[in-house]
Amino acid sequence: MTGKGAGTRAAKTTANRARMLAAARTLFTSRGYTATTMKAIAEEAGMAVQSLYFTFATKRAILSELLDSAIAGDTAPIATMDRPWFAAALAAGPAEQLRLQVEAAATIFGRVSPLLEVIRSAAATDPELAELWQTNLTQRRLVQLRLAEALAEKTALRAGFDAEHAADIGLATLAPETYHLLVRERGWTAAQWTDWATDALTRQLLP
Image (cartoon, rainbow, N blue to C red; front, side, top):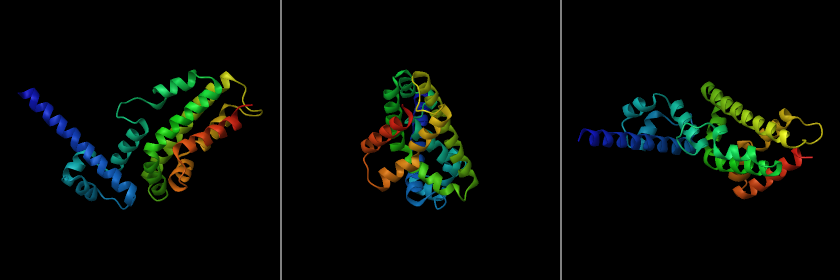
């Protein structure tokens, strides 16, 4: 009986946390970060504001958890470079590697692009979000550098390019701002963006 009761409480806690996160995502992406208050998130979730503070403590903590889970696609504590798609890209031939890393970026941006736009927009006036944006940028650059190093080990890069230069091109081409502009603003499909980005990286990086 005790075990069943504990399981029920744990399930309720998990469900309440999910409701809070869903409410916050809705408000962040519709109103913006600054205009969204903890009180508004609690009301959207149908929860007491004290419960929200007890669970997350700060609005930034909510946004940070939303960002992490959206990038990963789940709540498992597995880093990007430990994910199956990353290992597959490292093991693939040069052209296939570029295709796989672009497809992975399209999948991730499909989930996270609205949240990254919230962070980018608020970073200019909010030091905490500026730090969060910079951390995300640094992490994306690190991923691109490891992929560029792997590419350079498989084939000669375009004349005059090294892994550092290739990583910068990957970072710029596979930027969430570019995805947001073409897919969210200009109405491209994810497949069109994927084809364009794959072609761009192939032309830029391979001889």
